[in-house]
Amino acid sequence: MQSTQQGFTLIELMIVVAIISILAAVALPAYQDYSIRAKVSELILAAAGFKTSIAEKATVNGTLDGAGSGLTVNPAGRISDGSVTDTGTITISGNDSTIGTTLDIVLTPSLVGASVVWQCSTEPSSQWKYVPLECRGTAMAAAGTPAAATPPPPTTTPAPTQEPCGASVGATCDYNFQRDRPGIMKCVYGGDGIVVAYSCT
Image 1 (cartoon, rainbow, N blue to C red):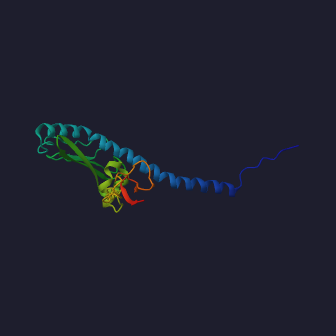
Image 2: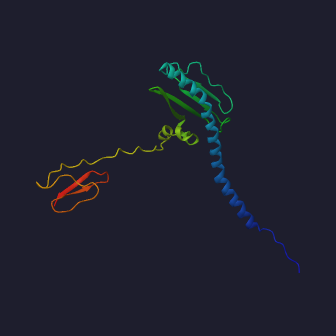
């Protein structure tokens, strides 16, 4: 008894090719974005040495004036260009040939007390999706993507003025539970433990 071997039909092959094409169309752009983000991270790492020098000089002198004097950014590796201003602002640039897109990472120092605080931004702002989270705030807002909103401060309801229920009754409420007995003040508390209402029984 002979067995007949059959291969794939043309329709089956076309279905397989279509599935592979769909997967490639979805995965390839995501991989390209991931690859660019990894290369952009190297630009930020390259600025670490400049940040240390600027912070040390600003801390010793008590000012950012001249903190970046004498520092230069040499094109190498992922860096296509860059600069350091006298006040310590660092710009590290990448282009299509080094990172797969064109953008600038700008690190701006601020002297707060005896410490130097850095703010990271991206130029152009439309390239925010390729940069780390700490560099996205200003860029996302400029690109029309709302940054995370700051929650409003919590509000508290002031306690009402308590008046004695009677000569034989103290005005102190029990904060552990409501007391509802003759001659005792009954208090109602809000979620923050503040008296919001009371009545006399």
